[in-house]
Amino acid sequence: MTVRERLLAVFLPKRCVFCDTVIAPVRVCCQACEAHLSVVAPPVCMYCGQAKRQCGCAKHRLAFDKIAAPFYYEAAVRDGILRLKRRDDPDAIRYFAERMREVVRREYGDEPIDGLTYVPMTARALREREYNQGKLLAEALGTQLMLPVYATLKKIYETPPQKELDLHARSGNVLGVFEVTDRTVRGKTLLLVDDVITTGATLHECAKMLKIYGAGRVLAVTVAVRRHKS
Image 1: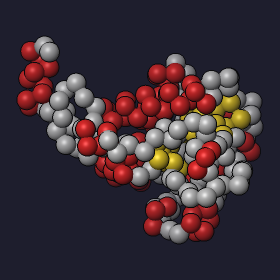
Image 2 (image 1 turned 90 degrees about the vertical axis):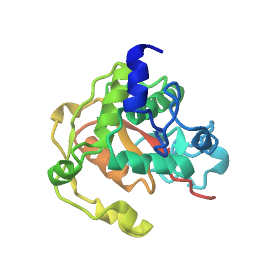
Image 3 (image 1 turned 90 degrees about the horizontal axis):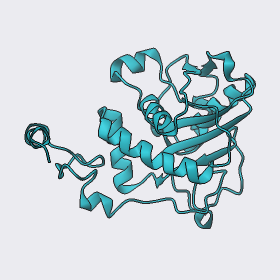
C-alpha cells in the first residue's frame, strides 16, 4: 500500500457498499454482508429475472424482451441499494456495475447491443437527490462494456414512490409518466438499466415507450430482482 493509500485509509476509511461499516482498503464489503448475499443462480428466467428453479411468473411477458440481475432484493443487497439511494458512493456504483456486467455477458452475450439507457427521474427529484443512481450505474456499466449511454427517456411528472403502493397500484402509478426525448432509438437494441425490479411496472413502461418510438429490442438489467415465490 502506498503512502497516499495509507493516508486515505486513515482520513477517508473505506466502507462496505452494503452496510457502511468501515472495512480494509482491499475489500469491497464486510464479511458479514458477503455471507448474506442472495445471488441469482443460472439458468435464469428471461421473463422475471429469477432463477428458473424458483420462478413462479408463468412466463408473464412485459414490454422488455429479457430481464437479468446478479442479486435478489433482500438482506445485505436490499440494504446496499437503499444506501445508494441516500448517498452517491463511487465504490458501490463500480461494484454493482461490475456484477451487472458479468450478468449481461452471461445472459446477453449473443445480443448485438447498440447502447445503454436508464430509468429517469423528474427534474425536481434530481435536484433534491442531486444524482440519479440509475444513470450512474448505466454510465459505469457502459464504460465497462465499452458501449454508449443514451439519455433517451424523460419522466414528465412526479409520482408516489412505488414502494409505498401495493402490487396492483404500481402499474397505474407509472402509466404515461415517461416520454422519449431521443428519437434515434429506432431500430436499436437497448440495454435498460435500473437499480431494482420489483413488479416490473417501471421498466415495462420505459420499454413500452422506447418500442413505441421504434426501438428494436429492449433488454433490462438491474442490480437486484425481487424474489417472487412460486
